[in-house]
Image 1 (cartoon, one colour):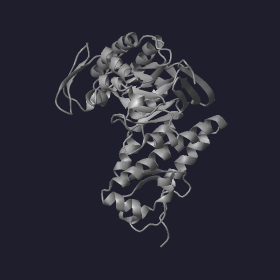
Image 2: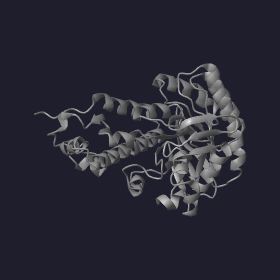
Image 3: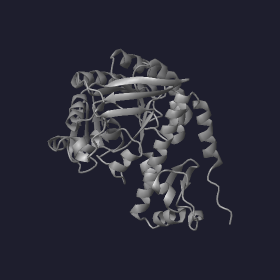
Image 4: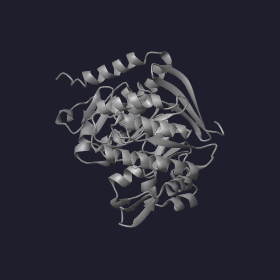
Length: 377
């Protein structure tokens, strides 16, 4: 534990990095996957389970928590850590992406964004200063600047306008955040799929000397090769001694490829959302439990897994739960998916330390490609 926010590089293999973030509430082993606890809960999971799977940090969200139950209420109840019974680090997203994707009647200007809640239609204003204030009320450990995220494809003028606005908002967020020794505020690189804008954004954020940097505005509809090319040209501009966070990404393959490009932190709703819809992530790749071929399959998803949900329940039973729309099906598959993601991250960290990340990447990719071989009947 540390009274200050620090980031230490432990090993590197090519551009892949093994590091540690230390802060008062705990140590975050990187590369790290952060389960998404949008509204103070990782859906279909007890947080004790999430911790036992190897999660050092979870993510919460300004947009959802400001609407329900309200940041001031969470503060009165002791902050998000006490409220959710998670005493370990929490990163909060600023709400910018959710305003773009969920809010109605959105109006954006230099001051901030005004929007109508998707919950009850009430009108709210979110400025850079208010976003940081809310994150302070939640008592999160890593706070994100408010930014404007736009969907791709988009015209250059629109991408550049949003990027410049996000930079100005980053400066305001940094002033509002001030000096909080045990916490951190991260800036967010924007610029769409335009490399020169991405590099300009990264250079100007770097000049602000923030405690960490995120790459935002990806995984919003662009092909994977566009995302990877953007990382190839953007990540080297960011400082080597600060953590790098790729927001909202992604699939296991996205993670493996992005780690190779120097990314340290990830979050995504995919493992929890997929679990609730009958899809399992395993070392064999994706397994769709809705498929009829699983109806009489006695095998577990993976007999070698340390996760009880993956190891101890038959595919036939999981298929039955999913097809019957039983909530236990979503719970077990979410457990399976988060277990696989954390197992993958542990393997990534070990491979970087051993200097064999390329071999590891090839091995896991070949496992996904071989797939799940059906039993002989």
